[in-house]
Image 1 (tube, each protein chain N blue to C red):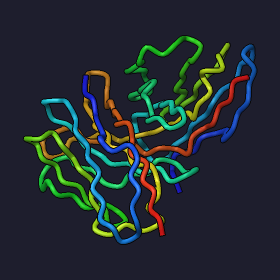
Image 2 (cartoon, rainbow over the protein chains, first blue to last red):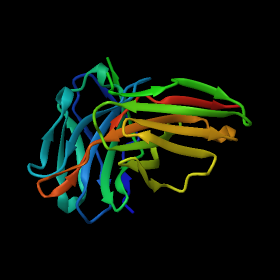
Image 3 (cartoon, rainbow over the protein chains, first blue to last red):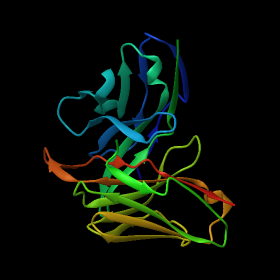
Image 4 (tube, helix red, strand yellow):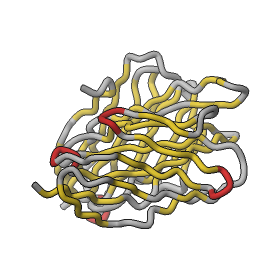
Length: 115
Length: 118
């Protein structure tokens, strides 16, 4: 079974600081990779996704992520965070089994951006 | 706004009650999901329906009973729940397809139904 680990559980940054959140997964086969964001009191929203092709993917709100296959990593980055980026960020890995699409989430990173 | 609609948004029930959570999507997606999310935790997969058939059950207790009446609707019937079942229940849908020679698909989530079991 696949697993997803996020190393940073709580991150506090000042506005305009750069962000990098780590994500590693443990599955040797073909996977789809995602970052979801959950703003306080809101539903899960997709930030970006990687299926194949260019390992550097760009998402919404200035976020990007880089897939490094040799490291089983899919780290999320943003050059300059804003106060409105305060939220919970989940890395997720999708594995297609005989039963369908199993999306497994990492433990999440709570990001707080201070003014 | 999410295109996956869940009702009710909030539900309080006793341990002897029977209630249902409902989910609807009109994106033509053929896979639908139930996830459970406890506070400060990631969502955990409960059930997957593919083409209206239950395809994955993650060893969920029988007091949770899913139902997929048609391709747009997904229900979760609740009976004899325990206080520890209190959580946010998320519905999602996806349209899985082949791209670049591999299966791909992203899940679209609803806002969730927050359940409290007394």
